[in-house]
View 1 (cartoon, one colour):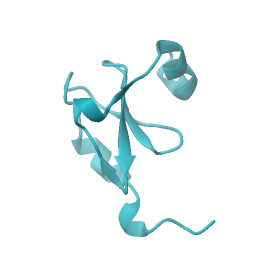
View 2 (cartoon, rainbow, N blue to C red):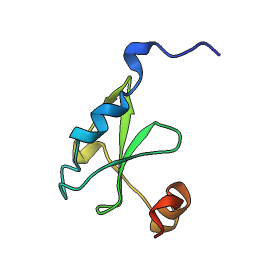
View 3 (cartoon, one colour):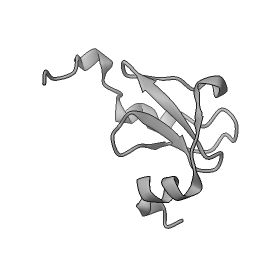
Length: 76
């Protein structure tokens, strides 16, 4: 598989500046680096071509049990 275009890779430093549009709490990068997750809102926002889509209509609801599996370091 070819390496992704570097322009389409999410810059982890950007994560420090972003918050959930609903709760204004911090976001967590998913293990596969394809989504930003709001633990407080239980929403996952997709990252498309390195750009996080933080519109509520783009988010998917995350089941609390799935959230625990994806982010065990949160100790939920």
